[in-house]
Length: 264
Image (cartoon, rainbow, N blue to C red; front, top):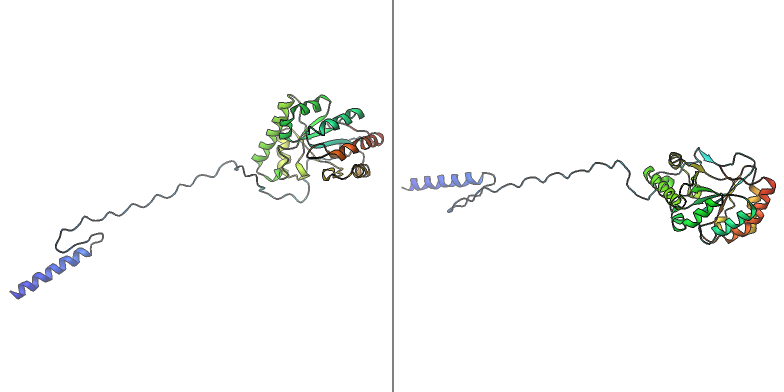
């Protein structure tokens, strides 16, 4: 009798241990075994979006400036007379005064227009064209790092600026593009060319953007100018009283020594 009891006990122990050995199953002595637990399915791998075909709008430079100015820049008139250029306008304060000076001297110039200023003051764009001056795209908001941005962003900026200028003066040609700060890259030169504009640099910079006295501006221009020079001046971007004051003497001297021409 005792042997049968021991044998039954041993068989029960084997059954219990055998149940515990099955993965995912718990056997409780004295009660029914629960259903096997369900193993959760693995989470799906995250989907990786394809890289965009066009660069995103970053507004941050993506390439360094070249060590020297790229090829393709217009830096002289190609003839003996010199050319006057005015940047960063149109300004409701200074552009009309500069235009008055030019009209009184019977000379024309090239105005390098900032797109958002052209949009704000379309009547000045129309006056510039009406009085026979040349138009030049100077970027939408004077971003000196524009040439270092992705090509798609350069193009969008120049197209937007051209649209603002041509909305103000329908049909007026925009022959040139000038990179703010002269921070040229081959990419910005190429985009300007694709849009039908020549890249306009300069050969005389009196640094009137730093607002030196009128006598200093005059001396710097007249000391540096040579036959065919392109002179950089400003009618926008701040107080241009000194540039305005320097204009009569500068223009008179340039007309006497070289002549003043409209860029073509």
